[in-house]
Image (cartoon, rainbow, N blue to C red; front, side):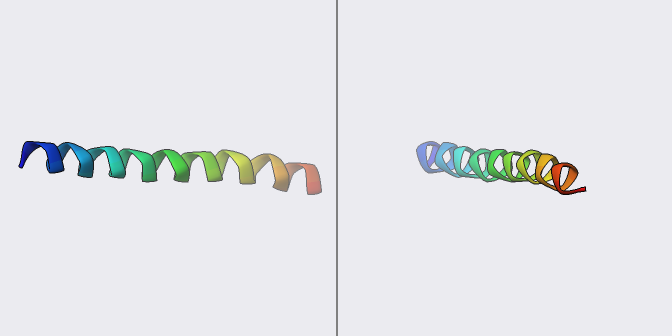
Amino acid sequence: MSYTRLQNIDHFACLTENKKRNISLAKPLKTSEN
């Protein structure tokens, strides 16, 4: 049980990291366009 729980936390952390990365990647693109 604790193992799957840790996996879920890891997965959630990965999702949040990807979101942050996408946002940080999108911002420079927008600024360069302007």
